[in-house]
Length: 409
Image 1 (spheres, rainbow, N blue to C red):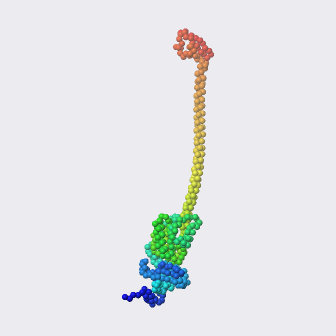
Image 2 (cartoon, helix red, strand yellow):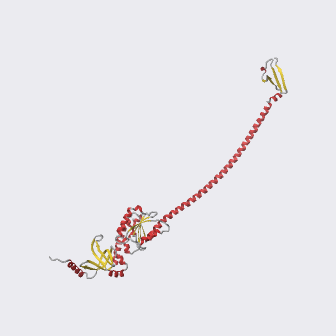
Image 3 (spheres, helix red, strand yellow):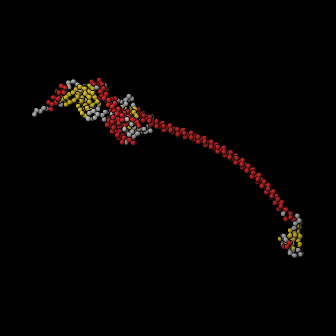
């Protein structure tokens, strides 16, 4: 049985590939596991089954430093935006096979239009699905608490956007205090989606601790921001138990995360300003209510004071009238009493005078003067002749003297 060495087999494969792929060819693939070493880029190129995550083809790829600098000069910053894990690429490759190192594809050129086109195509497909399912209206149905104070923030602790957000809150001129808890997630790259979904799940499990959720990152290219354009992210934001505010990118950017959020703002600083203004509106309303209460109280007190003054004056006036009437009535009663008392006194005096005259006339000495006499027996006055017996001696008193006598019969 004839046997071939491994080297012979690999050499044969190399010759076959070299004969069939003399010129570079364009291929479509997804770049993954990108590593950079001395400006050389090593990664896996994969193709997945349409609509699924199953890998149906895979090959090693390399972008040598010399080609990197050539493409950097040609494409500028776009090149670095493309060389990110999970990016769909259309690349021109030289097919290479080495007896020792095996099969790899050497990248010579990249078509950025394909990458951005594929990204936008996927984005439009997700937008259509979002609108069809009504996800863009779900989170905005939450009513924001009157005061937003306890905030769960999804961002990278090293991201400039998060620092801008945090500084803007801390430096607010109204002295509002915010309780900010950071859930540290990457703001781009293939791990963004899983980390963001995991953080949202944890927040939803403890939703009673927070007033709202904020997702922020600074500016970036469309490719950088496209990591927020996946359906799972849009779905989880829409179905969140809390209102979600986003500040992703610059003024011209609008990610799908922004599309389904409760409130979408242009920048992280704008999100911070929104929170401050929201609380200011509440405080202003409280101040307005307090001022209205104070003004109403003052008016009520003034009205009561005026009413009390009117009542006091009415009481005084009524009292004076009543006093005058009572005084007049008292004077009239006094005069009537005096008149009646005078009449009674005159009457009594007249009666007293008559009695005095009568008493004076009844005075024994005056009675005697009128011809009467008083008979005494044994020093006692006698009122009947029967009392004096024969032979009794008695004394007769007249007004001008007394006579001693004796009864003879």
